[in-house]
Length: 301
Image 1 (cartoon, rainbow, N blue to C red):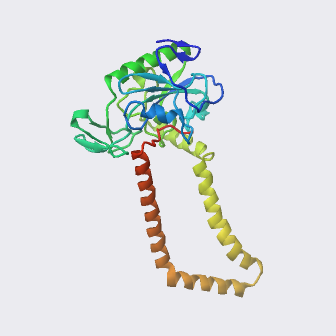
Image 2 (cartoon, one colour):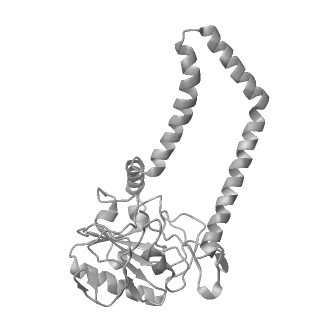
Image 3 (tube, rainbow, N blue to C red):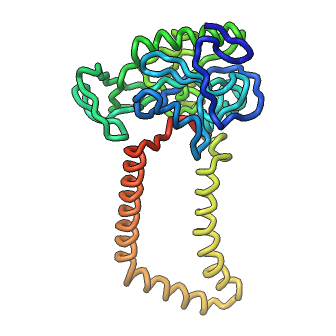
């Protein structure tokens, strides 16, 4: 297998609609797709989806290599990420996705994927914990064909792009992502072996804090906090204080205190019940979405 004009000559090319600008790749990010494992499922999703996520390369369970974008073009796969001081790895990395169902819940004898497919002992399930992947997960091993294929793919990319690094998604997005599974040896591929020392914990915290400030989650959380703390409080209590009418402020606070004493418990209970119902509705919607074939691979925008 060789790379010619940024395409693998031994791969089937099936282009995604989500191709970005030209990049100079200096990193390979290995992913687990976290999708149904039926052949073509991950490829079909990555060809066109509302999230606009994709991988450059997907390796099917039978070892077939499918390329969806030239290796020197940007695709959305890593999301909030950092590698050796550089942030947002989508702009300088090649994404290789190994088809897998992601983490499973259960035991090595019987475990279920997020889309409610069951796997059993015949599938060779493995229970394995790591500092990067957490505890209590069951994993479906990658196939021998996938191991052979990724070795060839990585070797071809390394020859075409000398000096390129290799890392797992969980290494560039520590604490946020746990793919690929711990059953693929990143170091054996020529990458940086995951460490467990104190330096990693510091790196995780630093990366998370720096990148979170630019994330949608961070912005939405702070907007919500601003609305609650700034909006509700400043437009009422603070405004009352600003009119220099201490008695009016005291009266307002007394009324507010009386309201919470009288109705605080029902309001809290109602909010909790409402939140639970919303969560259950979302779970039901996601389950139906997965069962209808609308999968969401592990990649990010």
